[in-house]
Image (cartoon, rainbow, N blue to C red; front, side, top):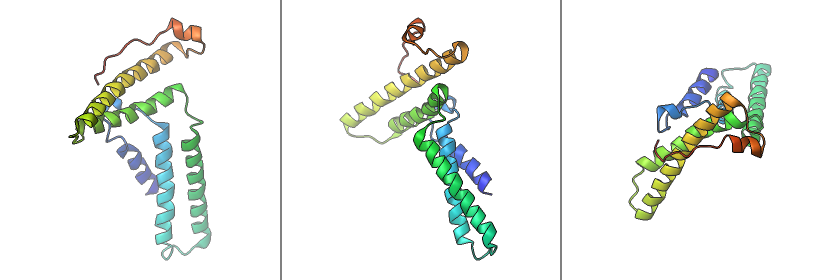
Length: 161
């Protein structure tokens, strides 16, 4: 039940992306799902202790939940397992959320609307740039030196999603 719920929570976190093609696998979202699943495990077991009287099993479940919680928290806070492409794959849906929020919010103040429109433009441009970089790294490998980067410049992208 916890595994199914955690998997569903991972998928639900993508429902607020602006465009379907902005959905990319995100390690950070996976870690957050595991964090929530571990928390849910401990809370649910705490409420059901009267139903499950085997203290050793309960302690093992609490211990496993704590281990998953600490591990997932460390991974989400350190980002140590995230590299170039996985960073951008995680940032694309993150940027998409900013586009969705900025486009659909009931903004009445002209200054805030201007800011929201600027956010939409910059986030859409950055989504296109990140997708291009993912494709370029997949095809040609990382540009690890300034000379490599200069030989493969990032094209200019427009501000539309």
